Amino acid sequence: MRPKAELHLHIEGTLEPELVVELARRNGIDLPTFDAEAIRARYDFADLQSFLDIYYENMAVLRTDRDFYDLATAYLARARAQGVRHAEIFFDPQAHLSRGVSLEAVFGGLSAALKDSDVSAALIMCFLRDQGAAEAEEVLRAALPYREHFIGVGLDSAEVGHPPALFRRVFDMAAAEGLRRVAHAGEEGGPDYVWEALDVLKVERVDHGIRAMEDPSLVARLREERIPLTVCPLSNVRLRTVPSLRDHILPAMLDEGLLVTVNSDDPAYFGGYVEDNYQALRDELGMTDAQLDQIARNSFTASFVEVPSAGQ
Ligand code: ES4
Ligand code: ZN
Image 1 (cartoon, helix red, strand yellow):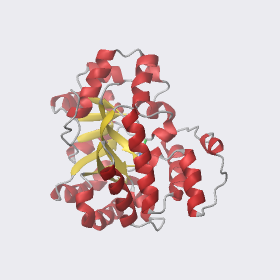
Image 2 (cartoon, helix red, strand yellow):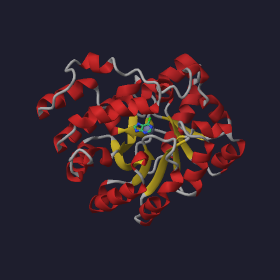
Image 3 (cartoon, protein in one colour):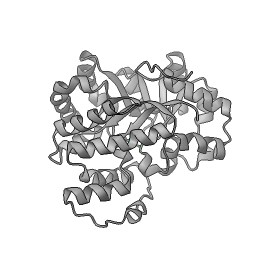
């Protein structure tokens, strides 16, 4: 299997229904159903928001540092089996703080899992854009005692109506702390969101970014500045951002000379981990091994950390 880095992965999106059930039992949390298949049967999404509603609901079972440890350990084992040599992992602290779960539990569990794994991995702390900029600044300040546990900040959750420019100050604060910067942009939002993420937030990588292809001058900018894009094909299909994999714009992005990577986003919800995304691109879109090899090489180029065993 080709070695690769995974750069767009929400750890809460790796929460498989079986683990939802196990953690609910362990923590004495009531669920509408304790049948994993019945939970999975709800994963028929109309758009990003209808996914986020279930994503936030399910993560209520994550309460202790052990829960976060088990979640990340399970992901890293799956990732390893899919050829992942290095992972830069998003997490959503606000989605846990709002439920009374401490940053200590979140950082403690995730960091311990990363330390105990033989896959190279690092954490990127995301701000929930629909919770506003003031809360983002608050969470960044609260996370500074854990500064050595994460390498960067990101911006995720409901995109439209929450443009990047609102988060200028918190991204400036993060830059001053030496943190790397990424943002979801151009998933449901238009190319203007990608421009803002670059110009205002000074992001070094764009998460999704598929709608950048609607603006040729933006495509030129991304190509000239070698800005990586973390594309998530199965996610785009399941959230109906694209009608089907056959219609995906990824091959055109590659042809434009963009530094595109392939990632799984929320694999427990979107029908596959990262190698499953690569295979679907080959089987359903007819992408060649040479194209997929290029994408895998791009993933190491686009990573923030030197990976000793990049396999290149
Ligand atoms: C997400 Cl696919 C996606 N987009 C935006 N925010 C997210 N959080 C988790 N998955
Ligand atoms: Zn995402």
